[in-house]
Image (tube, rainbow, N blue to C red; front, side, top):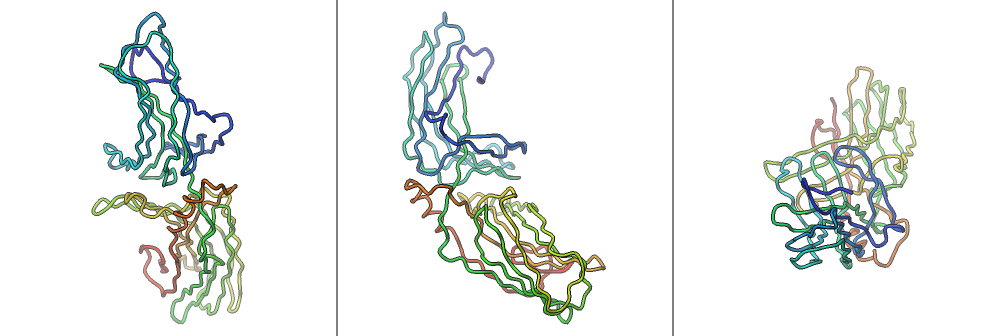
Length: 336
């Protein structure tokens, strides 16, 4: 049982009312470790109790009030002094006074709006937590408990296939097709690659899943690209007219849903990057954005409102382009 401050005369503990039955999931911490947290969804009630334990029963504990808060906040690592709160709920549990013995206080935050998914990235963290506070004259007694929120979505109504061409004039002409533009996190990407013209000696081809995290606005915009997966399509030279199938299972990778302009602070987008390498180690690539979404294990009525909102966030993606230099944003193809 932890508490803050030296020489505190009391300890606090936060206990959820459904702790024994509520599901727990792994979530990455800021240090890169994985820990288990209680899982919640948008619209669910958060209830429990705050347990105040006096360390010395023979002494009185004077205080200026006891409260419990439910907070959702975004922290940008380059601006750690500012926490951007998008959910802030408070319940007063006790008026100023004194305690002569340990106490338990019940609390309930009903149908709490939790609009965004919990996320820990390279430059940003979105977290939800409960915080109990005993206000004191010199130093408060504080206890926090993090929870994890998952956003569930419904099947997108429009989910067209992706068809694109990548070509270098008189040297290379490839068509490739993915069966969908939007995939849930346990989905399978199915596709085909057609070689229409091959006049360069290709020795290797792969598809990469790239996560692009964008934080900040204006002059303080940071882009972080992280290659989540590499999937080798072929090792050897293709010939004209050859067709190569693709089956890429997403369940084995650490992915989150696509996040677009979350609270005007950050975005997380995913791209399929087709990479070809010739015998002279030159690289040709084509990027295409895909939308990832979280499919609920059990569809519950309480999720319907949140799912409807989430489904509205989907945007259509389609692309057809010519060769461009590398290093540009999504929907690039190029040569290095």
